[in-house]
Image (cartoon, rainbow, N blue to C red):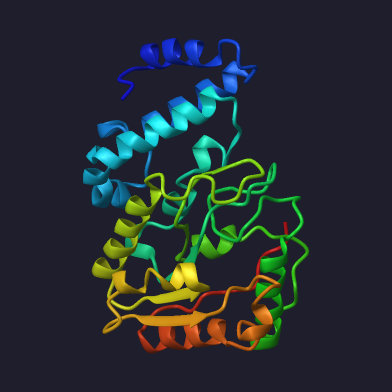
Amino acid sequence: MIASWESADAVSDQLTSGVGFPRVRLILFYKTFQLMTEGDRIKLEPSWKHALRDEFEQPYMNQLREFLRQEHAAGKEIYPPGPLIFNALNSTPLDKVKVVILGQDPYHGPGQAHGLCFSVQPGVPAPPSLVNIYKELKRDLNIDIPNHGYLQSWADQGVLMLNTTMTVERANANAHAGKGWQFFTDRIIEIVSEHQPHLVFLLWGAHAQGKQKLIDATKHLVLTSVHPSPLSAYRGFLGCGHFSRTNKFLEQSGETPIEWRLPPI
């Protein structure tokens, strides 16, 4: 593991030699990931930093760092940008989580991913799965379909929007699956299930439903459906009513419901 800014500089110089990858981008990404996952310098929202502190010392995390270093050494572009890798955690403190939506891995197109599952950055067209989410919101709660795909306001209200693999290679979906993120995000799911009294988990698709064993269904509401992808949404996602059912459960639990209507940007 790289131990200082100076040694990170030295490694970055070696990594970029002859591979044609812009040196400054590699330094910024690698330093960001290093500083976000190293001891007292972890750049995380305090409640998550405390809850996940032990995870950053696990062997799998060192292996994940090394994998990302090697990917950059090979000149590969990785999304989301380093400062946004942990955006889901930084946007939604542990004590504020009301709802958990699980995705698989980040969008792999330029400018799309910003660390929240299903969400894209301002100015980027909503991908097909998100369009179907909007269609279900319209059917379920009569919420007009917005002209953007930026879901940050959901995260700010307590919706933990977690990809179970938190990075991806450009134009190569699932390229970082099985590289260590799965242990980290499994632990996040366990922690939030243990810590919070009454949550709603929205598990769309087989991958998300594979995490159901990590959730205490005796105190949380677990809603399942096929994935909102155009390949499957017509087989049960459209018509599932998950958004109204989520808010009904939250209200019954004494929590403020989610305002699913997105503000204009």
